[in-house]
Amino acid sequence: MSTARVFREAREVLDDAGLRGGFLVRDLDSGEELGLEPDAVFPAASLIKVPLAVAVLSLGERGELDLAAPVTVPPDPVAAPGPPGLMRFRHPATIAVEDLLYLSVALSDSVAADALFALTPPAVVADELRRLGVDGIAVRHRTLDLMDTPAEHLPAGHAHLAHELAIGAGTAGQGHPVPQLDVSRANAASARAFTDLLSAIWRPSKISDFAASRVRELMSFNVHRQRLAPDLASDASRWSSKTGTLLTMRHEMGVVEHADGSAYAIVALTESRVPAVVQPAAEAAMGRVARLFRDLLRSS
Image 1 (cartoon, rainbow, N blue to C red):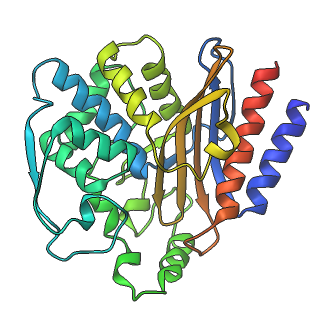
Image 2 (image 1 turned 120 degrees about the vertical axis):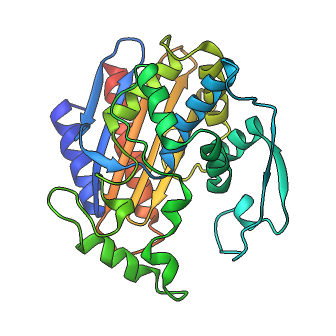
């Protein structure tokens, strides 16, 4: 398939699913890449947990943070509904720092991530990324701030109203009355910035071998595999990734490693104009576009 046809099909697939997207696929050995709006900045949602993990592990290796130290996490006094993880715990739990990393990355547990942010605040994570030469990722707030959106203040069954607000209230400059969707206030990055981070984790960089190998392992344990994995994982490939979801935002970043030794960093950042919480067509479209770009790079 020609490059022009791939880009045409990618745009059609995204448009049919009601998505705007920033995509980038990079051959980790040659550096060759294909992208669609790769420099467009999006709210990062839970993708921010990957740079958090890099920072925590780097500080731990230098002895500035004890990865075996126990951390007691209190239960949520409101018992708010949420995804599986510590948010649903009814009693205090004592968990080692490194095990909080597993919960944060593999299960996308935001309570675990915020326990880590309490030890390494957003400003510390941002400073560590700069030290490691990773640019373009804005780390501004903890992850549970993501949960305080209009969707959490609406009666059950009315979440679509929050999506309608999110879709209709943005400005041309990506400002937004919902702070988690305003790229000047939220944790935010482009597909290129996250691809650069993946490249630094999977190939030699200023990130230490210890930190990089542990993050790769944690991403390989990701339990959320409904987006890009169906199009990229197989018996002859390994897909390691992190997903992020926030109102209209659906993201995934990861690396697919093939049995022949080739490896591709893939980042898909999307925003939906469809006011619905469950959108299997959007998930499928993300995987289709990612595979189109990967297949074209692999065949070149």
